[in-house]
Image 1 (cartoon, rainbow, N blue to C red):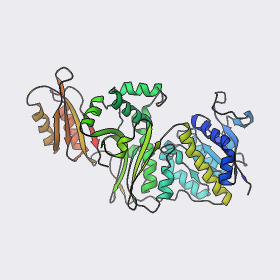
Image 2 (tube, rainbow, N blue to C red):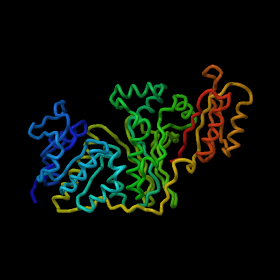
Image 3 (cartoon, rainbow, N blue to C red):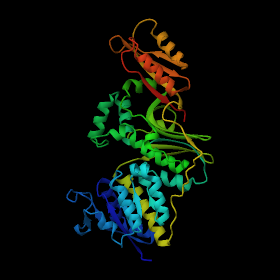
Image 4 (cartoon, one colour):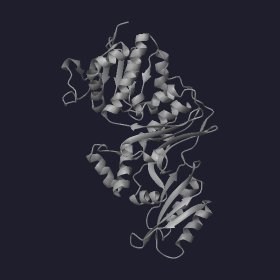
Length: 432
């Protein structure tokens, strides 16, 4: 075969320009690693006028994805435009044209993994996606290859740097969610519209993909319990700390016999846990395997070069396969249909941190405890905080293990009492 592999890049934004920068600046270095020259043959983007961190010849640029897809000399298509459409069509056309694919598109893979991977296998063309989860952390390769002999028991991940930065800043500066989010936007750690991040959807896409890799179970976002961080108060962060916990937006997938629960939500985790030490824009993932026990992965989960590093790693891996004439059947996952996915509500059990804002009068604790008792919610500890807002005082409770649905019903009833002045906050707790 030729000692050159041609790349077609579709999406020349922040990440795409990082990929080009690495492939240009380390061309000789990568050739030594692979024995093959990795050549960028064509670059496609709707915007060809904006300045990038790397200069390329104008002859390489096009606004038409088909110029890359239909170029028979291009071996690998790198899709970095994001979203489901037209990314899905671009990837499918590329596979049909006999090209290998590298993508960072977690939203697409989350929704269309089954059909895309089936097409990849049928056509004998690999699709790689290391950068789709946790940026520069090699979590996908670790699950697929390094830990292939394991049966996984659980995945616990801080998978969104924006939300983690916001929560870290709230803890550090004792500021509100709104103030922390604005600071994140100013520093470039949050998009102008950060709803996918702070509402947990981005984390749901990622845990869905990891769940598919680890448990062979296809889980759509609509079937995942997803809660964001927008209702977390600096009060909750402060009180959690007093109790020896930190609040993190955690993505969880864990298996118990034939049951699998997948959820994303703010979580109280013990301060001594390694995940509790993951602050700022960093990501952290705890994997539990039956052979290895618990493993911890930590690093930059986003950003131009960490993400581009994973994309280039996939390109290099594919280049080696092409050189050797191999199709690795990279995705060979059979869905385990015996595993029952727990419903989004009702079946989940957890300890809960619950904060009520009630008027400061005798007998209030008894009324609240009585309602909780009526719904079978047992209280492990309770603290009535100092008065902060007029006559309303925070009452913080930690429950014993309880089902979520009865707790929600109890809180709804309590919030309708005249003694309660704000909507109650309930946050799940997790002993990882």
